[in-house]
View 1: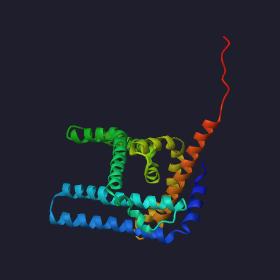
View 2: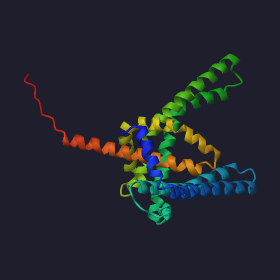
View 3: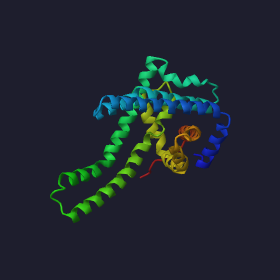
View 4: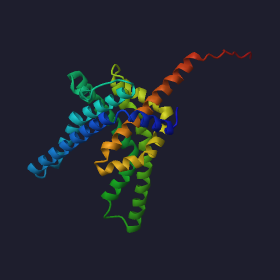
Length: 264
């Protein structure tokens, strides 16, 4: 598995010839996200106090519009680094037919459920302590309350670490989904867990090394320049990870060992 320096250098080389298209894709994704946010904010102003309706509208917009478009953008990036010369309209691939659209919805829901289960398992001790602290606040002494607050902070930190360990198993699943259109969503999740066993640590280190770029994206307008680089870096890492996994499978199939029997 190549190091993260090789991944970043490869991403920069590929990026040189793709800037206009990737900036257009990023601008399109940002525009769709902001349209949804402003539309939902307008709904919340018209229906005063309906917080649950605003939350439901946000989930529906994210699931039905933003995620199919995001997967289409990722598919465009993946095809570009594999020497495909597509027009930018390919980002609407998952809106092109009912079958593709509902398959993207199935992947999004499945992926979200996997992350939700990981979060519940990881943060259950923290949530249990916080609930105990909230429900018995009137009966606890100040010293005991401070101890429970400290314990909840420890559980939160442990839960975050545990959540990263559980959720990183599915980090490659979005790219497997957009790159392997002939396999089912359940198989995508299974393959993601198999591949990530040997590459998850490298991916975590890569993300930590990209924190500066991620923080730079917080300024908003800078996302037009940072998101293409982040997407390409992710796609290049996944390509190396898939190649590394396939290479190990071929080596296991081609390597033969003699059989030994005990004489006892």
